[in-house]
Length: 223
Image 1 (cartoon, rainbow, N blue to C red):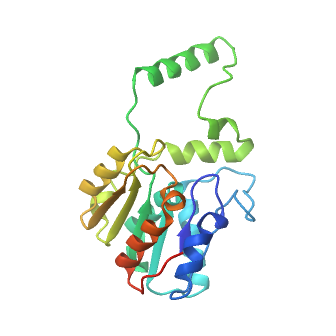
Image 2: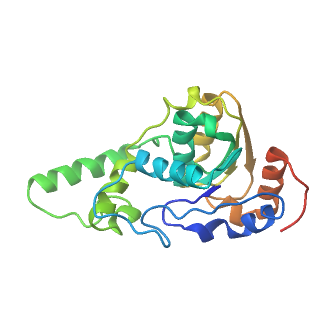
């Protein structure tokens, strides 16, 4: 089961899924608010996204599920592994979110500026990330709910085998996050692909596929 990142949809993993579907039953998910799945008119939490995945697994009576999650999809996979680990066989995390980033002085200055201007009744046009500013209504609140989750306390309780695949030049979920996850996840292995960024599975599809195949089993073949 493939879980896409924030801003993506089921098409994000089409290349990998096409190859893996020759040996495995593959499910591609559109999260609420992405692709063909609309966002409700009320804010959601990380657990709401997790419950939607569990509902799919239950509806289709899936067994021995392997989760492959990128970025936000990895965040969902981590929470599922913590709460519903018995449903899954193993997990692949690609540039996964889930840990709060380190923040420098520039970030804290922007927060203070935002709070000051808000108190003065002023609008700050560059408040928040580009993803945040692009959202409207309930989905904007959903985004805030999601990014404010720090899942570091979940990780030590995840005993499933976990494969971490990271781009060495990932700017969205930097490499220090991967190394920290590796330390916190008891049964994890980290592979770093040089000269690749946040979308390492698109930039380095052959290596990514090979790592996944080695981890979950199956014949080796090219995309």
